[in-house]
Every structure is written in structure tokens, then in C-alpha cells.
Image (tube, rainbow, N blue to C red; front, side):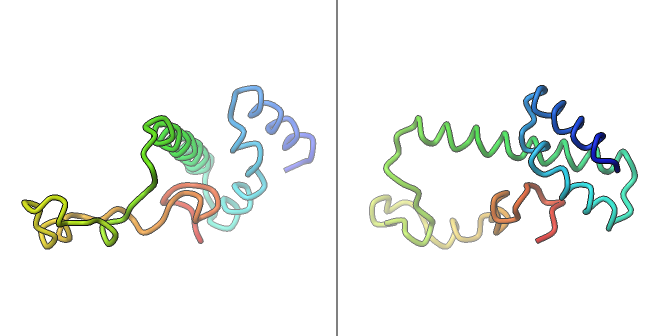
Length: 113
């Protein structure tokens, strides 16, 4: 893709409020080329990743506004505080994926490490 087209895409992405797309355009294009993605697949990837960034930002903002002192994992939770809670039952609950969008660099489950 020519430099003028990528520069135009970056400028348009910034004007549309899609800074993640503007910053990661080269990475998206190389991943799409390596995976032989079609236009719709590339568009789906870009939109999913932008949504993941926004959701992560929204979650972090809500957490900050909640003024909770800090994050705790289940391993750090004091089950004696709530004796009716059975740690084994809690441990059997489905776990979220072992990554965050920032761990992968750009975003969602489609990202390769």
C-alpha cells in the first residue's frame, strides 16, 4: 500500500476518533498480509481491536471512579471474611482468558502474541 494511502487512512482514523487504528495500522496490514486476510476480515479485525481498546478504557475508568483501593485476585481474597463462601465452588467458576488486550499488544482474541 502506498505511503500516501496509509497517511490518509491514519489522518482519517484520527479524525474519526480511532487513535488505536492510526497507531497500529502497519501492524494490522502486515498481519493481514501474512494471514492472507480479505478486506472484510481485516475490517472485522480492526473494528474488534478498536472496540477492545475502548472497552478496556471504559472498564479502567469505571474502576478508577469506583475508588476501590486496589485489585485483588481470588488467591489473595480472605475467605474468612465471608464464611458462607466456599472457596472450592468459587474456584470451579469459569475463568476469564489468561490475558488482557495490553498483554497482546493490540487487542483482542484475534491477535497473535
